[in-house]
Length: 315
Image (tube, rainbow, N blue to C red; front, side):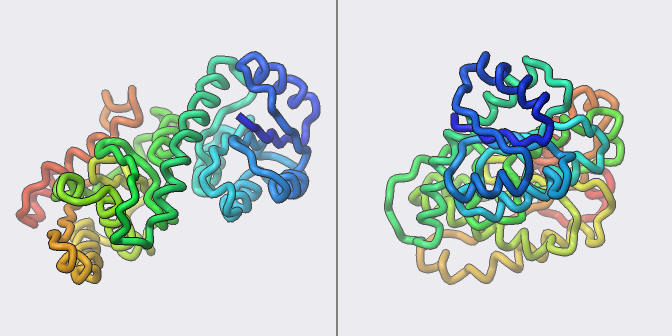
């Protein structure tokens, strides 16, 4: 991979480069500040970015936000490398668009895992590029390979983060900080119909329509959200919601009705959206923080059609 490492400490860069070389990553460019990094990013593209958070002038979090506004690096894996472990720093980094987060001093195995993750995401970027290219061409029949179960970035869903990044965020929180965290799933009940009976682009367009309806419904809420595959979205909240989940579901379903004419023309049903109850970390679930995502999706998938509030309380 072609890597850009940004850190104002030359001593740390002197440690990082040999560690990357030991992993077979020798195509590494360095920058000592956010401004220098942006200059180099304007001149060439990189496959992976490693950013320090605490730097004079522009912080790594601010730099991350600027990078996500660059067309060529909207989906480039960004790994924050820092000594800061507080929840505020973790939240700020992932909200700015970070893909992963690793703390100093570097552990070789941790670094290897992060680089492997970046290589995996790099392969997925080719699919994402094809999806974004065809996002507005609803009737295009270009061959796009999309797996039903596999998460992938939804074109135009700017509010979302990648599912792997959401998992990484929960892992960084750790068990001690999971008690204040909850998640809820958003399931497209008839997603399998679109996948089986329509072209891949129609399936992706349907998810894009649902994503648009979700974005409008949750625009006033503070949350992290991702597409989890199989027609399911999942949102993580660290504080309370200002809108009840049943109301959010009604708003989402109302929003998807704006696209009804497209589905009628394509002889397809309207996507049916169900929102599950809040999933919270249990004592045993704390051993695996990401299990809260699976629980949230299960609640959405198993939710009965009845809108009884007693079910939501029980969930």
